[in-house]
Figure 1 (cartoon, rainbow, N blue to C red):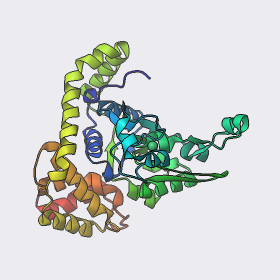
Figure 2: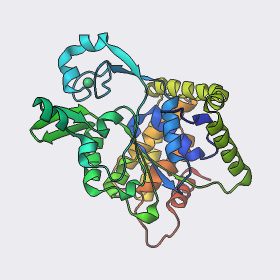
Figure 3: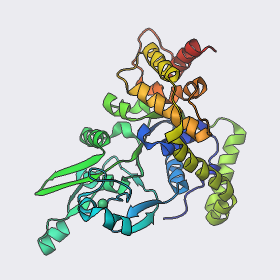
Length: 344
Ligand SMILES: [Zn+2]
């Protein structure tokens, strides 16, 4: 695989870049849904972000990227769990954060894993061949045009997203392994609706557009051309800025545990969700976690109205029910509610 385009060199698309950074600081926020035009660099942005992240420690020889710091199943695979902590502590290796593409036409076998037919035929052994979900563990799972994903795969994703575990029980196999990842989906809402349960699983949603500003377009093309002409030189040129972003994510992750979420901020989040009529409590939970991650990213010790206000559109716009009496877009509706509640 060649060099990834430097994250810091991506022109514009601030909302998307910001949402991805927040998801990197707190992966429990649950993924990013990107609505927008084709060819706006969505997949590039995910790959760039992953290459920006520090490599992760994995248990040597594990096919599921098990985390040496994970306590037990279901955060460890069966093999690592049975090997005991001593073994895990001994053999650590570093691996890059994975970015796995889930293509629309993928079979269920390829996604969840299946019986390794070659070994079954040649050696008569029932071995498991891990799928895309195993490869994506602790990294990113990217689905282009997620709104066109087949129903049975959506079911699989919903199960795994809820449990953090992939369970395969068939063809005489019985395998379970951890599968936690940041889901990044892109899609054009005009080409197919997303099932509400799946929509709900995305912590954040962002809108990206092809820039209409001439200067921005020129810069996109100029940088892309420079990167493709000389990837090493271009990466070198952006190395300092990329390193600054990496430090920001790393310190953000460390600070996350100490950022305070005052009662008043929780009440604000609840008021906003009531005002917007979002279903369930996931909206509030996401809003709180996202505001906390934002505060951590920016080095603020306490979550304030300002964090909530800035992050509300991303955390809530995909959770609104259609209102037949209000044809304003969902972003406008969130912004309006924020203005009414927090004061303009
Ligand atoms: Zn393992």
